[in-house]
Structures are given as structure tokens and as C-alpha cells.
Length: 105
Image (tube, rainbow, N blue to C red):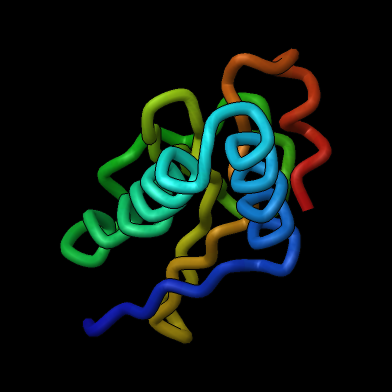
């Protein structure tokens, strides 16, 4: 099965916030490097999308969400086998209060 990775609008907005934060608090090169790493990390899932653990804080959802760790960030995703998609729902800074993850779109 050939899978494709798609990013939700919410996940993309989180990437924008992360980029802006590092642009303001570090510099362009740091911001770009961090964002590129986060964007490329889900490519690991193309070979085995269910390799990551299920996100415990989202277990009450109808869809199964999994977590891929990239440095200080949790990349929250689900797998749609029918459409051959890996859907990135959120990029969550794990240094935040974990209860905020329940607000994933």
C-alpha cells in the first residue's frame, strides 16, 4: 500500500507558530532547521505507519491517534487505510501541559 502524508490546517498553523517562535527567539536558520526536521520526521511512517504508540490522552476519540516524537514535539497522526493516508492532526510541544493535547483538532 502506497501511503501519502497530509497535514491538517491546524497542524500547519502549529508549524507556523513554532517557526515564528524560533525566528523571534533564535534566528532564521534555527527556525528553518527545526521546521524541516518536524516536516520530514513523518516520512518514517511510510514504511510502517502503526509503529508508534497510541496517544493515551486521545484514547477517548473515535479515531486512533498515534504519536511520533521529534525532539520536544509530538506529531499526532492517524492512519486512514481506505484512502492510504497518514493524517497529521497536530504538532504538540511536549513541554506544555499535557492536558492541552486533548484540544487536538
